[in-house]
Length: 201
Image 1: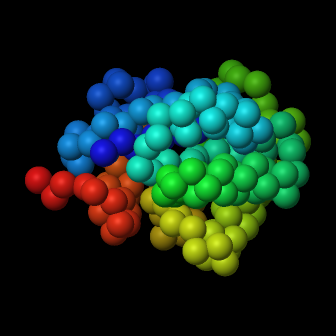
Image 2 (image 1 turned 180 degrees about the horizontal axis):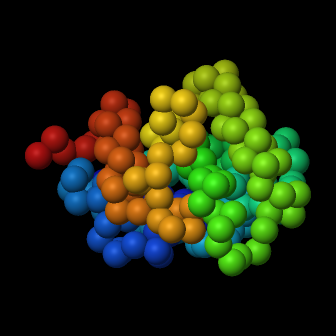
């Protein structure tokens, strides 16, 4: 049983211990092989460009596709992002691979603003708004296409719709170890619901 986790820094998980990243936790809990093809800073176009060598070439049973946040950092439109993500899902299905579309984690804008880093091209407020709009568009399109949807986004929101402080690293962009555990929990639950040869051991 092989699963590929294909994405950007949210998948690469380079800011935490490799064993604490959600792809590694999924592998450990489900007793399956997981390939982490996350590359920090990559866009949905980059994910699509390397989809064949990084995913299809390995012939996994399933692929979890998680991307789009970096596109919004550069203020790209939602339409092309959605097109890239669903093109990967279509390619996966064509090659007999079960696609799962992940919904990106929200930005902790309040915390991120205090860091010395490159700012989003159109500012923090618009970037956060567009990320929420992208998530809703992906959620709606996933239902219309009968595509499995892994809602990482909601896991990081409190009851008021704000980012949960305890799940983020200091940069406000990436999950900490607790955040990755929540992501792994959600991924494991969804994967167990799919028609995949996963052991329940």
